[in-house]
Image 1: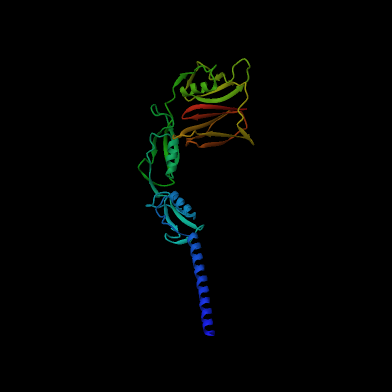
Image 2: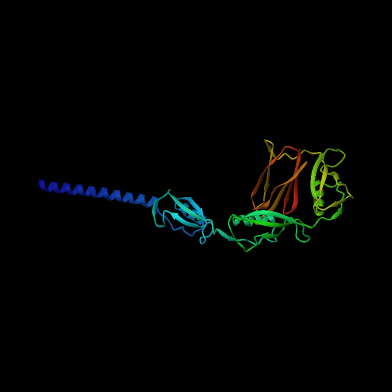
Length: 318
């Protein structure tokens, strides 16, 4: 009887141990299956695609290094750590080595492009603009690239600079100064540009007998001979308040927002001061993007906003 009781007790104890071990293994496997993932093969994949895959697996992406590679395209994965097929817990890091592309690149042909377009193309290939030379050209418009050195098709290392020869527009010619009095500031600037003249200093005065924003005088005066490329100073009547913008600590925070769409805008922001004219921005802006500029504000100035080579706004600060 005692022997049977001991046998029964041992069987019960073994059953309890087996149940405990089974429960432990089951829970452990369930937990492990939930928290452990297999690292995918990311080599040769585009970095954005790799980031999406790792994010879906709840793994962290870390860029270990970036280096030139003659085979793996730019912005693609060269190597990874851990290796593909490794099992790791969610939340762990996967370190990637990203390709910067081939160290030597074939130079693009920039002839016929504007300088702004060339800057974008060169930046995409990790190239820069070197020495800029200007020459008059009766056919090619101003700021169009006439030649480059080294020429397009040559092979150079990334980080190299390309020297450019740029059109300064038609050679100077002598014309008769137009009469700008009575025009608005925008109209006067449009006339100057159509005659290949530059906007010089803009002075403001207050005359209640004349309309607001009217040009009341300019130098050189109408009828005088002037060469194309000459700066013309304007005196403009100003009755209403000046533009306020967002001013702080001696600067104006200027903003340009490109509308939504599909085409980039060519935007130029020019600041006309009493003794200088400065181009603050010249480039192509993607749809929906903002351009923010901090412009020093320590004297009267006028900000000219050009979109696709058309003057669309003037803002005056006094």
